[in-house]
Length: 259
Ligand SMILES: Cc1cc2nc3c(=O)[nH]c(=O)nc-3n(C[C@H](O)[C@H](O)[C@H](O)COP(=O)(O)OP(=O)(O)OC[C@H]3O[C@@H](n4cnc5c(N)ncnc54)[C@H](O)[C@@H]3O)c2cc1C
Ligand code: FES
Image (cartoon, rainbow, N blue to C red; front, side, top):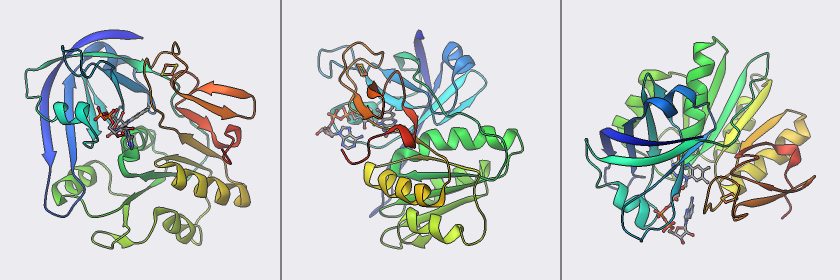
């Protein structure tokens, strides 16, 4: 685990009317970039003031050379303040944290994302692509996103399929419906997923029925990010575990989904 003063080198804002807004933030962060693995996250200090006091967790979306990137949405005060960062801004980062995805041999691999859950899966997809492992990346959204963001994603990965609930981009429907549809054409060796709990719960029910291994990256409210506060625990078949330290990636079989 490294505490690094990183420098913002680029900040892109994907904002169009009647769409989900995303922000792509890239840091020069040589030490963390050298170590990070798909599924791991960092804790960002947002400001020098007391509010927001706590660091905020973000998955690594992309790593290249000495840089790391995050893809985020505005939720509250911390993420709103982040949108004001410009190139040159110095930011204190703690990471890489947590346990990432475990590679499974064989193919194809399916990556199923909901909303900002695309972040850790995009990084994983990049590594699968570098290892020549065949995969499909399915991304579910409520509404459309800016075409520039899609163009950016597709410039790196062409096997990305998008589902929107209102049909304003890609296929209309839930990403879990896309999974069932795709299963008529091929059977995945493993599924990796990150997104809202209802999506993960539905996906787990389907993979259990189909007997397909599923790894899930969970989001939890995190105060410390390093296992000290117990603020992020999740109930598993072997007792409570810390999402920040034992996860955020877990084998779905381990999680007590009925909670
Ligand atoms: C391991 C991990 C990885 C993450 N990776 C990403 C990422 O790659 N991109 C990204 O955009 N976000 C990611 N998040 C979520 C991100 O940490 C939160 O959106 C952020 O901390 C919100 O901070 P804030 O100060 O803006 O909002 P706060 O002021 O902390 O919260 C504002 C309100 O929103 C609620 N809230 C906070 N977080 C969420 C959430 N995730 N969903 C719904 N409601 C929420 C709070 O309860 C509060 O009511 C990740 C979270 C975890 C645990
Ligand atoms: S966030 Fe403190 S123990 Fe996980």
